Image (cartoon, protein in one colour):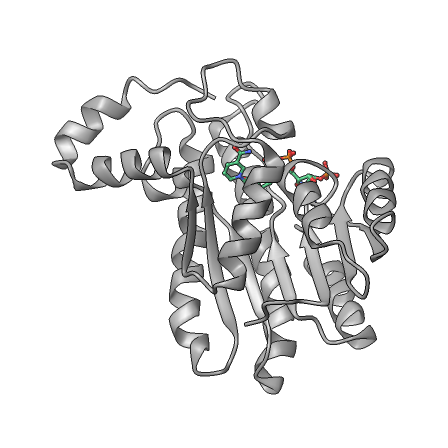
Length: 253
Ligand SMILES: NC(=O)c1ccc[n+]([C@@H]2O[C@H](COP(=O)([O-])OP(=O)(O)OC[C@H]3O[C@@H](n4cnc5c(N)ncnc54)[C@H](OP(=O)(O)O)[C@@H]3O)[C@@H](O)[C@H]2O)c1
């Protein structure tokens, strides 16, 4: 675990939570490797990071591209050993974003699950032999329950949450910290598209601050805001039939 990481990878850094995280970690002596698919937005984030006297390197890359991700993370680690890798890139497709449920689910899993694997596996290959490093996985409070309004998204977030929680225990003995992040609604490109009311919607900078603090404390699960997280925990404790009935009313993404 690193309270003061110097060499950091953030995927999905071109907007929303990833962009806010890049700014939150920017400081003299810090190198940020920032990835996304949109070069212009990434360059704008890199500029704001450089204004805080951090070193920023951008990479236009699709996290679903396994070989490219292994090559990029390996090269970043060759430059200087990575202290912290945040697998943040993700998509939240609506029901009209793909012609079939099959396609929508495959696209969601390609980015949100395979993309996380492609980020954390090359990082772990480097960190485990040197018994040092930290890997953060972006899940969601939606990954704690099946969600009728966004079943593929919630399932993808459940997969990476469970994987991260398992790996955390397994890699502790190798000196590598693994953390799972479970935000509720945060202002970002993703939530800007939502046409329903989002309770306790949080500003991205505030979310980034909570994530940075949680990672510095090596928390197993960094979940916020507490109101949304408590509500989900309560739903988890209800008899399944009751939760099923309640969740049926949730809005469709
Ligand atoms: N906002 C929320 O309420 C909320 C709540 C819980 C969890 N999350 C999670 O937080 C993460 C960040 O999302 P956000 O809310 O900040 O949304 P956002 O503003 O839409 O940001 C998503 C980021 O992921 C990148 N990305 C998406 N697909 C990619 C791909 N195939 N390859 C590389 N980069 C890709 C995007 O970059 P390009 O567009 O440049 O490709 C962008 O930088 C996601 O994993 C999301 O599921 C968000």
